[in-house]
Length: 138
Image 1 (cartoon, rainbow, N blue to C red):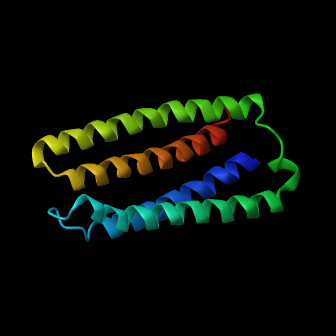
Image 2 (cartoon, helix red, strand yellow; image 1 turned 180 degrees about the vertical axis):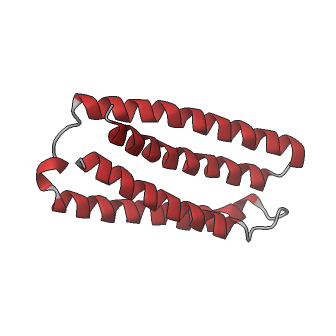
Image 3 (cartoon, rainbow, N blue to C red; image 1 turned 45 degrees about the vertical axis):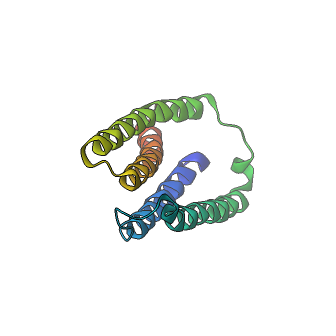
C-alpha cells in the first residue's frame, strides 16, 4: 500500500467521522433559528477536521519518512486527478439537490447544512475513488 493510499484511507475515515459529528450537531438547530446559530455547528466541525488531519498526517509522515517527502509519481497523479473529477460530479449533484430542497422548503439553515453536507460527501467520495483506483491499479 502506497503512502498516498494510506493517507486516503485515514482521511476518508476522518471525514466520515467528522461528517457524522456535523450531522449530529446540525440536527439540533431548529428551522427558525437565526443564521448565526450555524456557527455553533460549523466551527467545531472545521476544528475537528483541521486537528484530526494535522495529527494524522504528522503521524503518517513520521512513520513513513521516506515516502512522505516524495512527489506523486505519474500513476498517483492520474489517480488523484481522476478521483477529483469524479468527486466534483458528486459535489455538483449534492449542491443541485440542496438548491432544489431550498425551492421546496424555503429554509436557509437547511440549505447551508445541505451544501456543507455535499462538500463532506464529495470529499469522502474523493478519497474513496482514490482508494478504489489505487486498488484497481490504474
